[in-house]
Length: 341
Image (cartoon, rainbow, N blue to C red; front, top):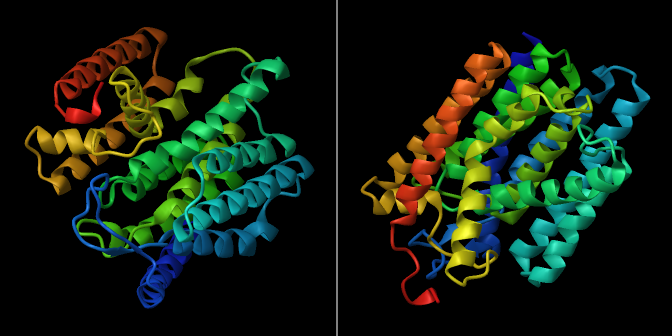
């Protein structure tokens, strides 16, 4: 019952705040205009991430008193909140004024360093000289992965909700109750926003929302028990599978852009969702298809963590083959034209 109340509180606050933010951004003229690099064809209010960020922080800060009195955990949670606020403000500055790419990258690296300062890093690798740089790279990558995924109505918010519910279930199973609560709160805040963002969107989350989501999710991965035992086992694959859709989209698009002589940071209509539309799906069905893929990967993560090594290897082999064939199909879609080298 407690979990339902926590989820419902974050959901209701987000449901209330999102239309308020929409009206405010319309009055202030903070709007995403259509252009050649964007999918939408009409002007849409920005800054839906303000509703996500506010709902999340209100509920988490109110609930902090109920968390276990663990100095280490509380210190890490403080780092998550401070780092999340910093990344949110960085994204907000980009939404309002625009920032230089180098400044944005620098800010994202500083956000990752905040987590490291508060004791969060990849611990399956015991050598800090290796784990700290990989932590920074991982947080930077996940922060941008959800930013990249925010390329079609409802996609980033919907996938984030599915991933966060998956993390909630695993954290609950492993007895990491504070992390389960944080995951559930963010899922509720994101789902509340999704009501106005699902096709056809009435508001976009903006960089302040997508970067914040990716950053908090990266922090949760670093805090998960799968990261606390040096040495590799199948539990390490759980967050990778749960986050399979944003990881695949970011890696695939980045590599394909490099192959075609285009900067990975360059915007464009070359993401997985766009290519699915080119293959014949309607935009809404492309989004729903990727939701289904995300749910399937969540089930695969559960299966791998609750079965024998032999069956787990079979599942992994099937997934690797499916990803390869899917990527091969997507590469045959012409998306670059004159942009390509």
